[in-house]
Amino acid sequence: MNPPATADDGGRVLTLGLFLAFAVITVGVAVRARRGARDAEGFFAGDRSFSGPQNGLALAGEHLSAVSLLGVAGIIALSGYDGFLYAIGFPAAWTLTLPLVRQIRNAGRFTLADVVAYRMRRPSVRIAVAVSTLTVSGCCLLAQMAGAGALATLLLGAHSGGSLGGVSADAARAAAVVAVGLLTVCCVACGGMKGATRVQILGAALLMASAAVMTALVLARFGFDAGAMLGAAAEASGHGDDFLEPGLRHGREEDGDPAAVLLAGLDFLSLALALVLGTVGLPHVVARLLTAPDGRAARRSVHWTIGLVGVFSLMTSVLGFGAAALVGPRAVAAADPAGGTAVPQLARALGGQVGGPSGGEALPALVAAIALTALAAAASGPMIASATSLAHDLFGHALMDGRPREAQQVAAARAAAPLIGAAAVTTAVFARNLDAAFLVALAFAIAASAHLPVLVLALCWRRFTATGAVCGIYGGLAGALLLAAFSPAVSGKTDPVTGRSLSLLPAGVDFHWFPLENPALVSIPFGFLCAVAGALLGREKADPARHAELSVRSLTGIGAR
Image (tube, rainbow, N blue to C red):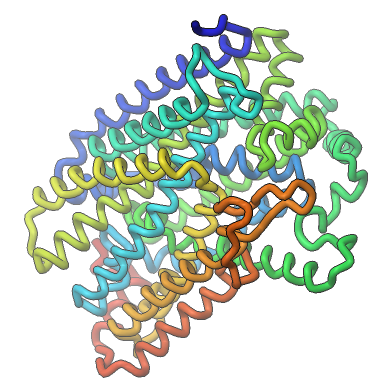
């Protein structure tokens, strides 16, 4: 016999209804874009018809996912200043992409491999880039799917044993993952890059609007006095002024262990390097830059992205400190030790203050529905990048020797999207302990270790060769994966008080030997070393004419498609 409906059940039903409404709108937007996605230029690059503001908003839509909103706000609510560092790091990362944006757009056509392989027209280079692209995009897709599952279980009150109409938390988690996966596949298979772009614009607009409304409500609660909000957050944290100072999450001085303090600082530096240097190497970011009409429009897109991400990061910070002040870190941690419930709990508190019990249900339902929709929008970027790489790089160049018909490539990409989606959904459903934050950090680390070295060297070093590109990609990829597999993020990290595992694997399983949770500090130099060593030690000779041609094209745009 099903349990009777409660007020919480009413909010969850409202969440489901709103999500279905947003999903219908999203699919409609993607289907409408199908007419412009019949040829390769339309499906893979959206006919290069998007302006700087449109592309900037779409880039922001790929970044401003629910993982960013819920994860960063939750870290701030639990860790104060140290969590705030995560928020301000993203605008800095986008700023550092500017030196390469124009060159990437002018040198490439549809994929990251087009940029790298322009000088080295060998199938081995495209195969290596495709393998790395699928790995990075797979991590990003799994992060979005894991975020959808986590959000669904939180909405069902999994931590308190809640359910909706007798549906268990595990069933709801699986249903959310499948729903987001199907929505993402529909967006990509129907509309290609044009559909994905419009969906990302929609997702970014919805997420920005919801964050803006909640930010205004939080600031209004404190008379628009940020100092009062920070003071209340510090008081509610139980740490006093330490909540607003460095060291609460990374490198606590009170531990009395200088080695542990140093290690924590290096770990944070490694993560920061991955986020800052990996952004420009993400395959879906490169694919987005290649949809701009020219290099100038690509730079304008990133300028818009920097502004939008900066504003969003500020709003996320307000929501994190607001959750600490109005909900309390203890209540946030009790619902989810990682802080993923901070924004929904804050929405319930704000909605209750404004609209009573009805508002306490409506606002968190709206925020949750928008978050699920934004997850699908953010996942469409990695999925279209994966499908394009399979169809254009592996099928079109490696198998068909660069001479496929456009219709064949588009058909291959449309067929690849459901396969990629099915693989991501199946993995996310059965691998229940996936950590979205770990997957995102790993994707950035691989992009910084495998893609950044070959991008920089292919564009700037005249002696770079195909052997160097293959060695750099496989070396950076293998280095990042190997170090991550033997890091505390996978095994061996436990809570010193409760003994609960803080790694992907359960407590008692410990085979880690690499001390840092993120491998970027070591794997990025290793990727560069492999690329340079491969170019210098390989038998192949560089072609100066191709380097000169690429230099002129990347800097001036002459000959760019």
